[in-house]
Image: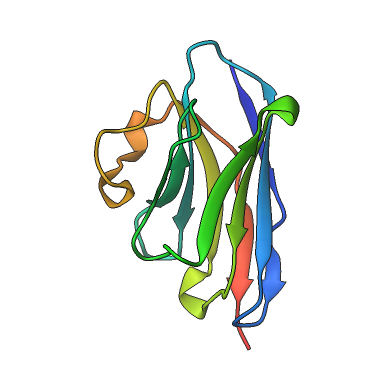
Length: 127
């Protein structure tokens, strides 16, 4: 069992930054992959970044150079640093975990690979 809780979302102007956090209150043994997904109205849920148990990261091309994923193992917290935000980044952002990271690029991740999900935190980027 694993409880995930996202925070840090909000409303910002284009070009500004946000840092999302995901706290794992209960950890499921064997879970080695954590990822951030986002879903905008009318669009499918898509992965933007992942990190495995060794700290290896994978970033989607659409956000590479602007977003970075990291974790603090001591506090069981996952982060998504989002810089130079654009209106197209507006979405509900979700934290998810799986036994392992899919062996494909984040653009090809499917939601059914991931076992546990947080409730989401809203990010809105507008002028």
